[in-house]
Length: 312
Image (cartoon, rainbow, N blue to C red; front, side):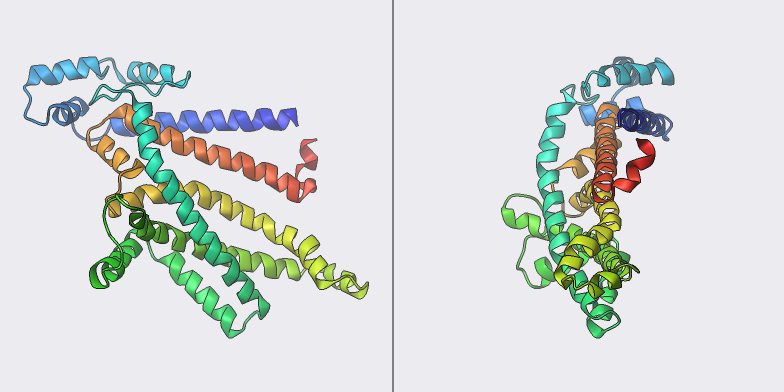
């Protein structure tokens, strides 16, 4: 177990370091002068060349790639995200403010996705190949094929423009979260429905189940003790990935619906070449993926102890 934990932490460190280096390199080598972009975002006006040079020096952009990366990564190792290159304020409080909008949106989307996918999958598996099964699979396939940005625009046109039931932009009232959460939730429901349906049908087809039935084991007991654990393993994988991808999806959806949050936070930071802000979002996303993968490994070993036998 100690070896397993050490391996997981080493994997997490490699992923986080790679994400930080890749993002810094992309921003550093992007077309244009990052110092000029920072100066324009900071002063919101045409700035002379000496001001741009001063910004380049203060931001550490004249020190070379590796020195600049080292200057940024060193405080991060002790949990300091640094200061914004544009505003000069600490990144962490601004990041927390953005997360206070994004996290509730992601959780609402996850709740909608689970609430829709579980009943659909259970209805579909009652009569495999029947009309309910075909309808559920068709709806899930269509939902998975529709991009989130297009689905969001369709929902805006229907519920905000034509019907006038819900607001489309902003985050001033609780009603403003409905359309963005529905956009996220429908995508999650599409993936979970297909995987949950396949997992249940595969689990019900296991060769040892008829033996339990011949011994007189109740159907509910078979479903609870044997079908559910087997069906849960692939669902855990997809659920974990969807949970991590909700952060990415929420960022895109926030831009579509003009919501404050990590979406606008990240877009504004990229436009201004605000390295500390961009890196903070990337590190947060990478940390979420690493944490979710760790939880998936632990849940696997709970559902099926045989998975971790080779690590003992």
